[in-house]
Image (cartoon, rainbow, N blue to C red; front, side, top):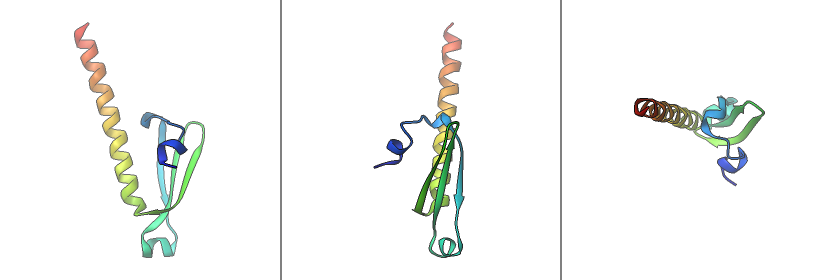
Length: 80
């Protein structure tokens, strides 16, 4: 099962927050729990390797999604 299936195909703009939790061993061995918050629920993914890298990548994708959406809206307004 992949992340998209677990999130129920939630679009990136529906993600409200991404948090990483690491205990002592998680910090030593670089794993942790990634929590993804949407308007309706929180999805927890345990034992994620390099969780801070995952969080950074996901946040970059969310930002890119938002930038692309804004650019499309601006082009649509310019055509009118």
